[in-house]
Length: 114
Image (tube, rainbow, N blue to C red; front, side):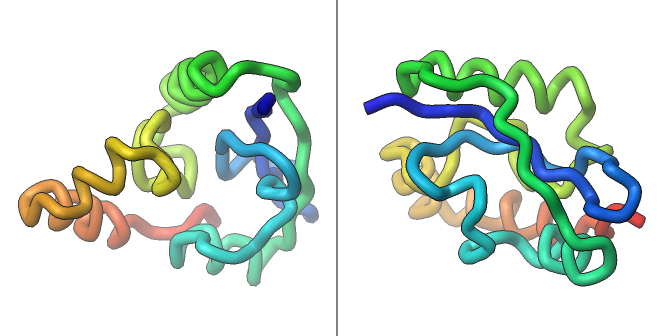
């Protein structure tokens, strides 16, 4: 299976606000998005751009981390710095740890992109 890295951009101003890794239709799927992503989309709409395509999963994860670091997590609606989407075994295991879970939940309190 191959993966891609995608960017979500505001439809009205073309500002990058989210970077993710996926396969299939994930980049176009609005379900399972954090509340800051939802607020941004409600205010601005969104478009999808595939930034890197046809990658093995480990390369897609690495590229996602690299791009989020380059743009800066505080400039995005992403909660985590990449590489640990809720589809990964590591993320599922981390979610069971109450300390890590609280850090993730605290990250959800960040404001949306204006």
